[in-house]
Image (cartoon, rainbow, N blue to C red):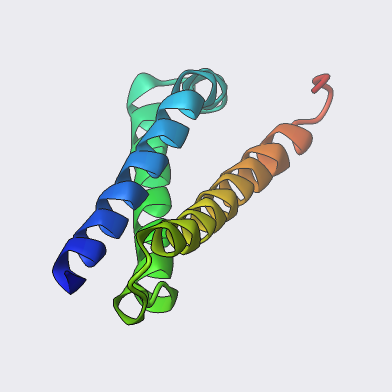
Length: 111
């Protein structure tokens, strides 16, 4: 039962992060292509953001989501969702802050 709970929380984390990253991908790609002026640069930054989102969310779930001590699947998924969304939030905040700094620092261009 412990392995099933562990595996389900990890799969749930990956699914939630995947949905969030798919939702953001097209808009983020357009912004980054405009900033980088190349597809290769944009692809690098998009993949970096993906790695940040997946690894950040998984690290939070693995470190703080002690699902082996609970027998309730709903409670384990609730805690996993909170930690996963926290990881996504931190990643999006980090990327948005860095993009905003780049956009805001361009002199003479309206943002």
